[in-house]
Length: 416
Image (cartoon, rainbow, N blue to C red; front, side, top):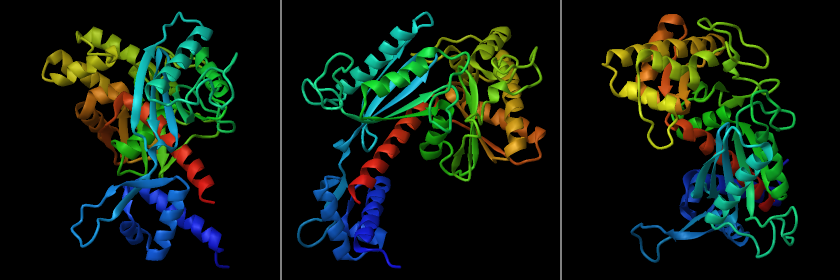
């Protein structure tokens, strides 16, 4: 049966909003071309969305035409504000952005190994609050995020609509919660609960860091032209994210891609259920790479906040003709290829992206060396690419996830 007028209007509104998300600001004429709707229908929906506060005039077209220039409409960026967190073992990074994803403020803070759970949570929460205030995201004076007076247990917060968090460890697919994983700081799990308590009206979304990195590489990075690929994370730890037919695969328990536990040759023992030492982690994580560099005589000075292992790889890539650097890169490529070959043999992804700080530091040089080895090791065709986003991919993926969640909720609720 044909859709009712109200249903048809809702469908048209969502279509227009999606186009404005994807294409940016558009004229009513351009919306007509892209949607195939009639001019009166487009005029009606533009008026409806403007009255609803979802879109506004952001400029005029520069077309040469008789009469006034056409108005250009865009989504109201300040309709909601978002926060994204990259939670690492050694610290946390935070960005706050508007609904269109434009970053308004950002900061990072280290959290030392000796910091207790309570103080670590307070440091991370305080950083989120500070970045929100720097971004100009403020609620009513003297009120918390839920609009009630600030009091004990209810600090003054800006109005954050959605918070995306990327963290190491497994995400329970049934609850969406960060599972208690051995070897990870307790403050990671406590931080999620603290943010949900401090921001009672905000939607808090938690996702595995490697999965978020893959999302960012798929949308904005090295895998933009791929529906099927694997991101191999090389950083403080190792991991993999699997995207098949455009969909991120998490597995029955949320553990797809826990490649650090993969038993591999070249280690002294097998990994256990609670310790990935002896698995692929022992070959390609930051610690083992640092030891390999030391053994091969590779040295480097880290620039800025670059992790030491990434600095070593970057130094070797800068002068690959140096014999010590060439040996180091060759052994590193051998190690990475061992893990990558297992993934390729099982999934046949056609493309492997080397992500994380180390993957970004290795660039096309390391990617090329790994691809040469995979061609020899596997009968399946595979292309190896360097990350375009590196260590920043987790934060970018968290922001993309928060933005999509907020837009779906706001647009779905507002145009019904």
